[in-house]
Each structure stands twice: as C-alpha cells, then as structure tokens.
Amino acid sequence: MILDLHAHSVKSDDGRAKVQNYCQWIKARNIGIDGFVLTEHRQFDDQSNYDDLAEKHGLTILKGSEVETEYGHVLIFGVTPALQQAFDFTNIHLPLAEVISACEQHGAVAVPCHPGRKRVGMAAHLETFGVPEGVEIVEVFNGGSRGDEDKIAQQLAEDQQYMGIGGSDAHIVSHIGRCATEFPVDIFSQQDLVCALKTKKFKAIKLAVEA
Amino acid sequence: MTIHTLSDVSFGEQLPTFTPDTGLLNVKKFAVAAGWDAPRFTDHAAARDQGLPGAVIPGIMSQGFLSAMIHHWAPTADVKKVDTVFRAPCIVDEIYNVEGVVTDIDEETGEIEIDLTITNQAGETRVFGTAKVLLSQ
Image 1 (tube, each protein chain N blue to C red):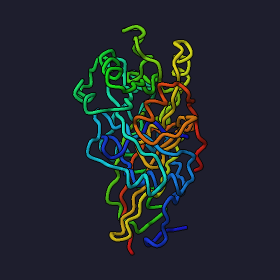
Image 2: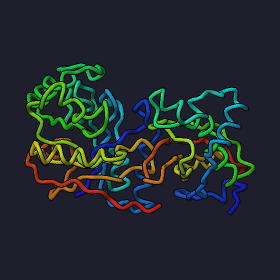
Image 3: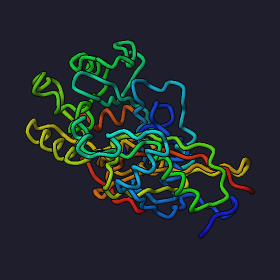
Image 4: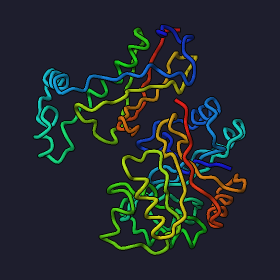
C-alpha cells in the first residue's frame, strides 16, 4: 500500500486544498497512491471526519500533525486525545525531546520532516544542538524540496541509520502524491499506520506525476 | 482552446503554460509603474548586498503573471481572487514557468478553482496558490 504521509488541507494556514478535491484529483489523474495523511500545521484536526470521502473514493484518509521544534518541523502519526494533552501543538518552540518522549508514551510516532531544509529542517540544527536522541525515522523525499534538500535528508538518514519516509507536503490539490511511502501491509487507521512505521518495513518513493 | 463558458472547462484541465518576460528591463518598467522602484527589484548587485540571491521579481508582478495566464486562457473570465504563497524568491533574468490547472468546478455558481504554480528551470515550486474564477454559464 502506498500512502502520501505529508499533506495539508485548507485547515492549515498555508493550505489551499479541499480534501474532496485531493480525492477527485487522485482518481482523475490516476495518481499511484492508495491514500494520504493530513498533517495540518501546529494542530490536530479534531473536527473533520473524512470517512465518507474515503469510502466513496476507495482511499485511506488519515489525520496527523506537523509541529514545530528547535530542530525544525516534525510530523506526528497516531495522535490521541492524551497526546494532545501532553504538549501544546500550537507552540512553535517545542523541545524535540519532549515531543518524542510524549509520542513514545502515547503510542505515536514522531518523524522530522524536510530535514534538509534551511531553518525548518533538522540537519540545519545539528551543529547547534547535536544529534537528538530518539529519532528513528526522517522524511527523505519531500515534494516541496528545493536544491539539494532531499540529498541532505538522505545523507542524514544514512549517517544516523534512520529509516526514511516520503510525503508530497502538498498544499494545493495538484501536488498530492508527488512523494509517498510504500508499505507491505494494508493501512486503514492511525493505529495501522503507527504499527507499520514501528515495524520499519517501508520505503520512501518518488512518483512520476503527469502534467 | 479559448475558454468562454463553464461548459468549456473540465476538471484537471491544464491552462497553457506561460513563460513571462522576467528581464531586468521589464521588471524595472513594472516596478516604476507600481511605485516599487527599489534596488532589490532592479539591481542585482544591490540586491546581493541586501543578502538576496539577486534582484527579485516583485510579488505583485508574479501575481500579475498568474492573472495574465488565466486571461490568456479565458479572456472573459472574472478573476475573483488570486491567493498566493511565496515559498522562495523568483529572481530577475531567470526563466520561470507559470502554470495553472483546474481543480474544482462549482456548476451552481459558475466558479472554478485553479491551482497556480511558478516553477524554475529545476522544476522547483517558487510560488503556489489558487485562483477563484467566475465564468458565465
């Protein structure tokens, strides 16, 4: 199963895509993904329920979050009400160690995203803060990467023996599915996704998207 | 194909790609006309002194390119909104592709939504956004 693990909808301040249009686009353009995870910035979207859309289009639609730490941005998969109480998702200065610890405690997974990006990526902060403990997975393919950002991410993953995921980081409809993660198992829920990430059997992929 | 009415449009339709004139002279003309005649837009060396990679295309000029692309495609369209997110600067004298694709059609109101991107020669998205456009039914 192939999931785009990093996408934003209009729920994010810089997101411009409606979720139903993501679904429509994936089907109309035959994009090679089976679903996507909405990782809205600095929040977990409690209000939205995409079950009907998912069923209608035969897609897996899950929700996660993208929070901000001293090491840059971090995706969180497996958000629970208890995890939401553990730290303030809106805080743009979260300590990464606190995020990782809370995720471990509440059965979630934290994944630094676009780690090769200036300012908001983990690699840029290693010299200042050192290699953080507890990171096991980073995003190595990001659809919004510029220059050598993905190469830096891949080098980081190789140096630190991290696993790598892929995500489009789509903010507009036509960017969904540019990068994704392939799993050997089916994933229909947040719990399935957390299990699949913890088993570490997955690989990041880039998808050729027709113009 | 020139678009006149909503029935001419289909979901996923690509607008003709537009490669605008980003030369220094053209940007200078725009900056003067817009009252934004600052060295960061019109002088590569001065822009570099300010820490920029070169003279940058004013954001409102990029938005103008996006609107122009829409009107090349649908001359009678009423462009209600051009909503842009600037991810990285567009540099004067570099080549950019201005692209659009239809990602939503509201048959009742006649409004369509278009994904907008400005990409460089490396295929990197420098600007993205959406436009809301009204077409006659």
